[in-house]
Figure 1 (tube, helix red, strand yellow):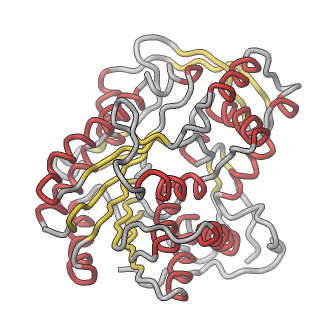
Figure 2 (cartoon, helix red, strand yellow; figure 1 turned 135 degrees about the horizontal axis):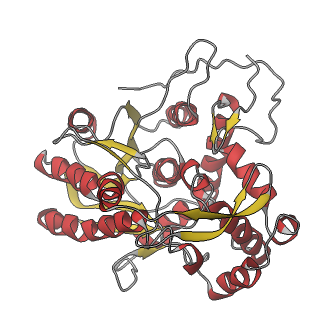
Length: 396
């Protein structure tokens, strides 16, 4: 079939298997071009099919020659319907790993569930024995709690007062004001239940109990802080409370890892175009201004550049892993440079529909958004019929 992007709001309902595969190969080639990392050898990536999770799996495998198990929850193709982009990404990764003679198996299912945790542990025991790195990179907006049975849904809301600021419809380029009403206590509790550290700790508890963690095993979860202009709705809002919980959980897990000499960290990463960030008011406008400035200064990074640098310059270096005063790894250092943030702050007040194309990089934002789904990728004929029925090899 000929596959075109069908966009509804901040979601694209279709994905292009050839474009997704090309994205994966581009990331692999980038990692290989940077040389070998003296990194992990047996890696579990929870949330391995898109974004930072996919980049972590690619960096582990093709940067450190690691064996990898990826856990994700993706939609398979159906007759006349494409799969989700994460399905095609994972299929391409499996194929490239097989050709490189790297161990790689995947599990498709709800990572919040006890069933998927058990299935993953059985696979580790059968094939790898013990693992030395666990990446936690889930980005689901909904969690069915495995103990209580309650379905929790995260929300993006400020705490205590209405939030009003500028945003952009990145499809039309129209800049407008938006207001978001404050949350309830229930909103905070639900968001922490979904995006906080409880499930990460449950995963680590299960892995510790099963004795499948190697000596000095490490676990890393991903977070975001961002600038002052977004903090009322993000870092000081419901999602911020969840991120605070996630970051506190790293210390709890580190205590539990002491018997094997392990540690847990939260890595604070850069703002990037993802399905999740596209849904957050203000963020698309901020990212378009950020991209313009970082590209101008030659310090722009995508997911794979971020994670390759995280592995090679933070996680696997001689000596202690560098952290900030709260014990977090900061790989958002280029984004938060004073000169970058100062420039964004200076133009924020004057940004409008009329001048955004000049002072921002909305074109780059749109390109990255479409690329998430395999569209707009170079050297691909999108008018050509392709087979949407792609299978994932070694899917357990």
